[in-house]
Length: 364
Length: 190
Image (tube, rainbow over all chains, first blue to last red; front, side):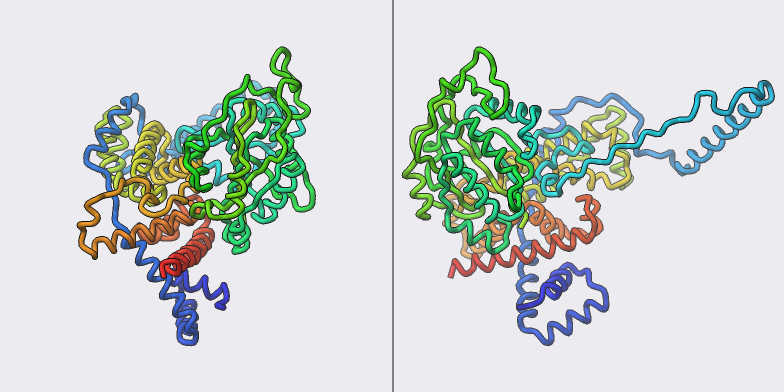
């Protein structure tokens, strides 16, 4: 088995970025190792395949379509057009020098007229320390990218909620609002450290809340290969307060806590179609559930609204509920015994409950 | 930044909208090809490129000129594409196998009448695109930028806002992962 260091050299060789010493190392390696030669050949062949992919283009009508959607900008000074032949730095320096001379002259002028004026009549300026920039986990940053405020209007990508904060009022209220808006179906994205441990932890928590979890055998195979394949969890007839409890429990630091932040969004029609495909059923077999009355704010610990549906009006949870777990980067899961068993347990969707899709994004 | 792009941006900011049309015309295909390969969907790619240009237009007065206009535009398009993938949960869509994996072209009955070589080429493209689709968006993007666009590490690092070392390691992992996926696909065929 070729050492990773040599594999990295070979991929860098394909990229054409090796220095002379590294090239000599690679040449020596290729002379001695058939495995290295095979690997290099495969990497170069794959690069060639990518380079050979056809180039896709837009038609000549495209610019007109874009222009049709924009309003003329109000004339402003272009920030990117320096005066021809006159470097910007020189102008700035000259302006700074002039200002300095004016300031110096003013100082001496006023000093001579009223020498009693203290240098700093206002008092010392207190420098407030800038708050530490909030660091965001790179995986979360990637998921949330698109809201980069540097490049135009931010794009809404769902609501992040820190699981450990779910015992506090504001994050709970945020979760309540999002669940209420979700129209009976939610999509949760969870970044986790390790896929297998995440599935185990999730299974434990689901079971504690009365939902048995069926894990497709391919999940372990995919996760064991360290491929970081996303993992889908699907459950139906989950009450909002149960989901809130599940999320709180997932955020608790037991052993190696797998989860940190959940990004919560409504389940889209596209999501529904994709889940149906993974389960090997038609999209029509995963319709939206019946909407109950306004979803009550039944996250544990949250104040119950007056005059709205109370917990007593919501039927108790079903027994023998199941969730299914399967890898995303795979063909239809219809053949797996776990998925078949899950499909056999499905019942009608009940008002006031949620269809829940959870996608786990393992870092390893 | 090219003097022409600079001039066109100046004209746009002066209220001459048609100058932006020229900028679109110049950069549309290169952007579209990248986004198409990222999303594997012609309609989505077209929408993303259009949205990227519209966002760029709205933010034109904030463009500082400290990088190439195309680099700036590219970042907007990539962020918009990633955002769309995020919204569509595009990682879920790769389950669609066979002819529908691209999702953008309906089945073409004339396929049967194409010469064998052309069919082979089309099949190869589909295999490679399916393999690309199975990579994470970050890995897919660095391979597209390196192999399909011929970008250097430094340019890639600038566009993506990461150190060159990160580009190097992402490319390494992307190449190794792509190799595994293509080998598995070949094994299945046999």
